[in-house]
Image (cartoon, rainbow, N blue to C red; front, top):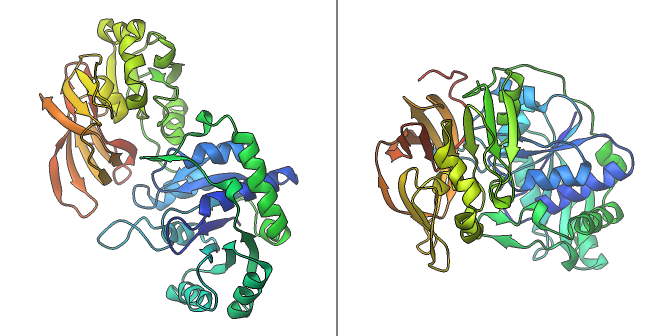
Length: 420
């Protein structure tokens, strides 16, 4: 068995508790790995740094139960939930962390931010425990307790509800953020120190033996994988292009595709390949540098390969990108696209995506999460799109000859099939 860390709401401390547990248990010699519920590129890299094992995304909206079980099999997992335990996509809340716990038959450990409550913790915890009889909440971890007296009040109120720990307020585990969430793991020079502080805090205030006792491997399983869009694929990988799902790349590799990697920020030219993939990331933070990297941009312009970009990679394939300071930078000029972060607007949600042409033609489950405004997009759209409620949205992305891209990130096959 493994377990899922969740909470009544976002901001309760799930990430810090998860990272602290992964590092603390690894230091004690426990073999385990992390997993993240839903679409997320930031937290999984912290999980990997905390325990030294690859982290998978498990998405109960975009993936079939078989797919989730196949990705979850192997080393014991501590899964970090997203948002609150029962928060999912409209209209029915599909994709909530609770769905993962049901599919994998896992207990839930509920992290409660107790900073501003005392006796009220009891009805809150009891409500979550009783809400779904098909779900087992094994106990709680109290976060942000103010003093030993405060902790005692909370424990007395909870009565016989198991308390796996009570973590006092600590400024040492606050994390810097930007508009898409946490700063990336590779951008933090203090990463190891931060993880050790989180581990020390959790080890000192949580029952590691009880939590480790819930860990055992999940059984292996198989599911249909996503087919590669080409046999050789060159993938941009650095701080500006970090948002590529590991399960997507592993699917391609398992099907026989040869993957190579290069850094646009280092002005590497794209390696020779059948397809060049520019993932999402933070190109807007490095737009001036990318605009000056002629070897990288010229390699895209002169290549005969297919080129596909997601979100940030899509913007780099366009004519221009305006950063948050209002400075416009020329990009690759392969798509008639101009985007801006000076005019910010949140675009967020799961997407059903169908492409009838290009290297990723077929039907897919994906998601969109960005603040870029499209100033100009001229040409043939790449995807027909529906949101999580099945409502048709305007077509997304562009395709022009061998070059294509959109703001959407592919997560998995639609209904387990790649056909359009």
